[in-house]
Length: 166
Image (cartoon, rainbow, N blue to C red):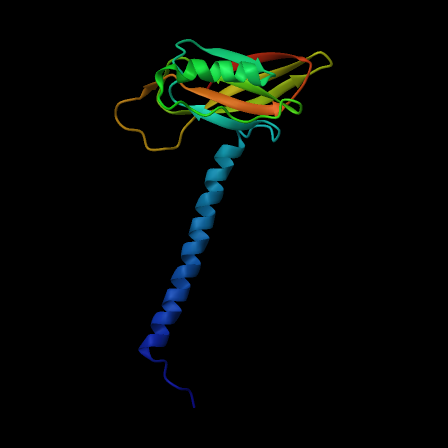
């Protein structure tokens, strides 16, 4: 003879079903967001180590830094109007070099993706692609002068930049 299922058992079964459905929906939505980001994935050996929305540099500029003195010089320029200033990232320049990209005036929130497009015996070509942020935007666009600091393995080849927006 079967025992009747009491009310508490039914609620427990419904809660378990709800949790399973919730987890599946959450995982599916996370995967959908990853597909968009993977289209613009940057190289594994290029790592964004610092960024800020105000550089004080009004025009687009990029630079390759291969020593700590030059990196400190850049940060002293950035920190002129900050008290306290941004800390200088610690980089092992025997293994890595730093690529700094100052975007100049930007409207809205864009995310940088830096990747190698070509590499020959004498030069490496990097491209910077700015991807729309998926964060909620306010009605008025923010005007900023962002900079991005990337770390990548050191090379003695000449470095060329291609900038493309969106």
